[in-house]
Length: 403
Image: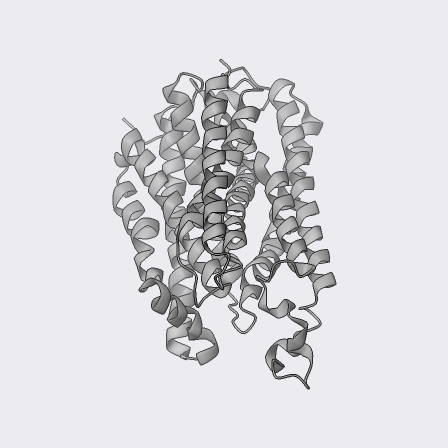
């Protein structure tokens, strides 16, 4: 059975997008005489990065399943592929924002101010000036183009091979899928680190973290698993995903549980090193957020660690659709807060507050993301026999310890 992307649903999505645009314009109008000139762009940047990162995380999760030759997950592969369908759109939108920053129309990145590199000027910053080899606009944009090309290339390649394999089994196609999945994991482990340095950490060029790239990677991995779980459960409920059952749900829940623990491990590791070292250039990251958002760095542990940990710790809870569904939504919300608190304070740290622009930016990008996702899902069948060699294993999969 194919998902019906009805006109009524499209109208609802367009309504969400229009509300988002109105809220952004309203906030821009209210702030036109204010110093928060970057705020509308900040809200868009945060939301675009959030949905792009979870799409990349979904492709990463799919590649992990291919490389590990996991049989249980084949039924869920179409969902993973289509969640990744936002990658080209999100990457291009991010590059547009980076480009308008590069030409000086928007000033989100502090280091793009040329006065910081001139020693005869009052604004001269010695720390930033010493990083000029890395912090220069042409090289920055070139690196961003490289990241985007790599992501789009692997998305298109893996999806094409996987889609073909779903209908016609071929040893060559399966080997290609395995090879490209390995290459994507290798490239992602390198590119994601540099991407997080460029697109997020460089917003505050005085601050650095050796764990930051892995912290971000763990964040969009667990967020992508959450959205995959949510979509699978919704499609199952409306009868479009009949092969998905509690055994598959149990394994997705295990990934949700372990992914939350992984993110918490990196969160704790970074905080512990900074607290123990007590170096002013490093702890300013936490002090700034404590001042602005009342220790949001600690409150984030509730949706991102405590709730998933206690909700999903038992095997029985991992097959309870209501518990898993709510846990997944809470994790998605928690990691949006995480991305927001990482990005926003370093752009307009003196003035940045959550408001109409942030809500509008989220609704706008969420609407575009959902439209692309549903459009892609409606163009493929989710319950047909597949040519994947592990399809029968996935179709008849039974978790060994489940009664």
